[in-house]
Length: 297
Image 1 (cartoon, helix red, strand yellow):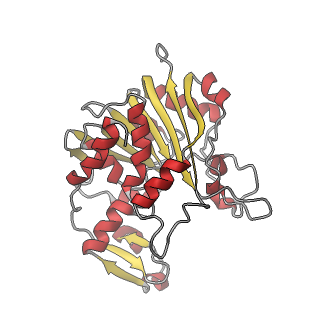
Image 2 (cartoon, rainbow, N blue to C red):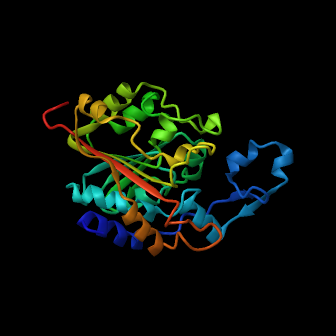
């Protein structure tokens, strides 16, 4: 890490506590997890394949879900720090497609009021216990389930005073505007609004000078002749011109960050174990960072 924010984000892992006990269920065949509410909605035949999960396995899933360690956010957080974002009380950050609660809690322990936005109802159920949201150290954690900005409640939750709007591994060109036909249609993400309306909503949610970071860790881009995997294309779904027209100054556009994450991945042992990543030849990392122009509303 190169910034105060990045280093304090790592140090804040000491503040993470085991979650309040809760019951989860895991399908013994697919290894997918379900909350009690989600399990109750399953057909009876599928419920027969569930086993109860408590203790350490439950706690690990609480922080990792299907997306891995919250420390995968470390580089994105460090880039925000080098761009001037400070670890101080009163800062506010929205995480679009947050996926798990760990990074929200880490930032809240540094003073940020954090808002996690996701479309997955499962996350709302998983993090619905009394201690999951609310105050966490000097900051706060809030989770909103719905489409931003198509759902009014997501826009209201963000307000208009954000310091940071962050998207990690969600706003990928391959998901939003695939340049090739995806292998499966359901792999495409539909924002529910035009590009212009999406960028306008982020612009309105940010303070003047607020940062918008799109950070994507991907496998290598699908080669020609192979079925297209949308998450392999981590380029910005929005053009430089679209950002400028929406009232942003472009700090970095489709910047390659693969070398840094390759080193980070080795430190976090991503290249070890049964699901080891090929960090040398199957990794692509791209980010775009823009800033809301000062003097604009």
